[in-house]
Length: 502
Image (cartoon, rainbow, N blue to C red):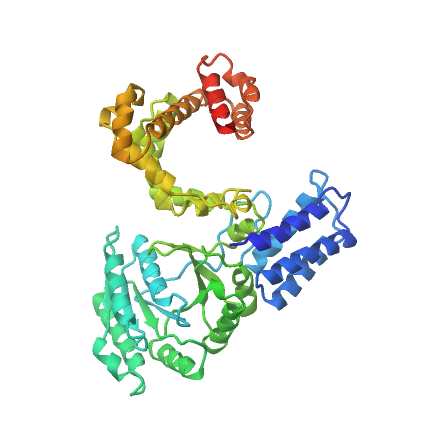
């Protein structure tokens, strides 16, 4: 989502790189591209002005560290300023990575902790309430979801459905639902109906002894006095511990303006940006904290109920600069795989004994982590390369179908496959015999390669990866760690290069 912003920063770094020093003239010229990129990405104009001026002030005349190039020095300046604008504390060299100081939630004792959700219609408020309940359940907190949005006819039923879905997710913590559907007809005809529902929900949450009560309040198509008056009454009646504003990241400048209006009236404690995985331009993320003063606490990164993540300014700044977000990728992997499974797989990889069953298990783990393009975008330098690439996830479906069409013995030892078996498997998976053969060859090549590389030092491993990426079998064969490792290894790599060139 940060393609335009990233392009602007890359232009800045290209223009500064190669210079003997960072001067006012070369930085000011390069910052023109950054300014254009930020405006085009829908960053609030006041934020653009303040950001560019502060970067200029920090950069101009700065002595370049002897061990760094001007471009590298500039990356550090821009990164630190981005983290500050996103609401975080820049990490100092040699210190551990810091979480966002405003991220996460605090919990009242005794409970329940009352969280009031607000936002405009269409921002994803009700769905996000369910996602937040799921997020808390994973952390062992019992939750009650209260349907206080009586304006939208289907809102009560929608939240009830979501509550049941979250209750069915793994974990021992309870997820309860509270509503007063008969009061929907009264809404708009009598004063304080929504306030009564919220007050009653709080009493029910106390009786049920839940840890957290989430109030899904009504939204409007735009900010108006009636909306603010009702939310103010709810706030006064139940005294929520935290008020979270749900903002649609796709609305750009309007998202920032509405967030400021809500904050001015309600003094919100935090913002949740939805549709953060969409084709938005990223301006809301850079603007909302600076304009409202309220921190971004969570981001919605998909449609599923588990697609809610804590907001880390340092990681988002890294993504804006095109440096990826490896920490988030690692956390996604850890959430889907236990340490025991990872250790067992590593042992099989080092011995070259990974089976197609193991391979299929890893494919499914990757799919649970999220869309493939989104995952690849978290790798340093890869996000920009993928912006115009359509990754066909149906290819993974075909691979799964091929493996599932094999017998257990064939998945354990694919080398037993002959032409007759390949034809049978291809019919069972609606593919071609060549597809089966190609999958098996590639799998055996990877198995052999990982076994061979397991005993190599880091430098040789890196050289091998670069040789593969550059389609250079000669460089691969010259690596000391691969010499004498078996005559079949290098030729198999060469044959793969030939096929890829064709």
